[in-house]
Image (cartoon, rainbow, N blue to C red; front, side, top):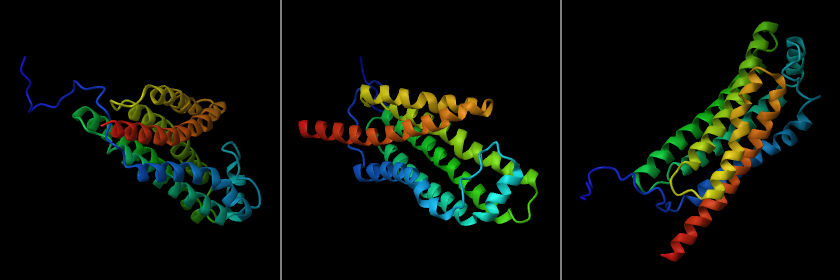
Amino acid sequence: MTIDHDRPDLSLPTEPLPRPPAAAMAVGAIGFVGLYLARDQIIGPLQSGPAPLPTASGDELLAWLRDNPLAQVVGAAVQFVSVAFLALFATAVGRMGRTYAQTRAARTAMIIGWLAAGLMILSSVISWVLVGIAPTVGVEVAEGLRTANFIAGGTAHVVALGVFVLATIRIPGVSKPLRVFGWIAAAPAVLSLVSLLVYEGNALILFGRLLCMTWTVVATISLVRRSRDRHDEV
């Protein structure tokens, strides 16, 4: 049997991954998780009370925005920067390819990671718009923007985050434990789609988000260590 070297080689599913950009991956994962977890502590002193739930009336939302514009602006900015670190992590994942199959899978994962980051950035922009128009806007417009904000930064972002994890663990050469944890983390994130139909499904948004965030940190440790061990064996 002859081998056509002009065609991409798809026959190496266990080909070792190249050493990932460890610094970018670590900074991305830590920044993404750390800023998300720190958000409430950062904006706490800036607000007069907790932000209204998505089920609150439009009047209550507008009243809170008028009293707490700085908290809304800063909170959205923290989210923006947090997912900028996610985009950095996704970009590092996109460079994890040696073979054709690895490169294609890694770039697909990177694009999905960028999408997840972009959805949260859209949510931040909507938050800033709400602050700017709160003094004059009608209740219906405020409620519509709040719904868009909730979908972009909540359900859509978390579902995309789960799909990003699933796409990353499909890169040939990713270890089995990391793949298993990836499935565990991604399942509630993707299933959080039910939150669009049932309010109680919001619990899956939080659960899926935290699991996927934890996965990025575990993935960084696993991928860097695995590539370093293989490098030392050579």
